[in-house]
Length: 168
Image (cartoon, rainbow, N blue to C red; front, side):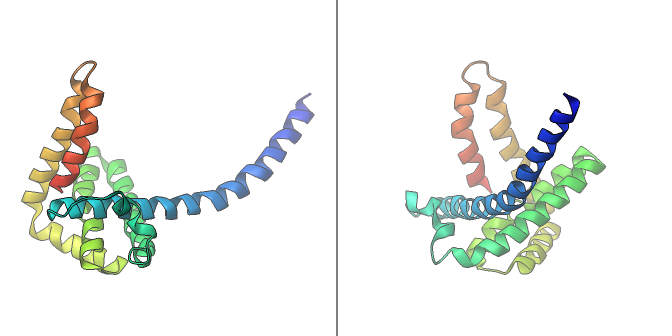
């Protein structure tokens, strides 16, 4: 019985591992394109332009497609830095997270390359650390406080999260 189970595990691994190797990069590219679209929508709202459903899929359009690879680079770099920050302690991870919030809007707004976006985000963070921390604290508070309200907190968070994104 144990030999049959071991053979089944090997067969499953032979299917699952290649599927993950193919599926995860595709999902990361798809997620990056969707993140570009969501950020474009928030930028349009912040500029006073009317939002549309097509903004959500802007990352797949001819205008947004060239930014998918730089967005993937920026998001990967931010994830690695946040992971390292969280492993060091929660506070450095939160600081890195707050400093990297403007990266994707900068990438879209200024049409930069991935490495230029990383460099400008670091310079922006060095120059304006106080306001970044203040806006980040307010944004986190707006997102978290409704969660503490019994029963209706989850519903209120549906409205608070987009509001917090507009603060960025």
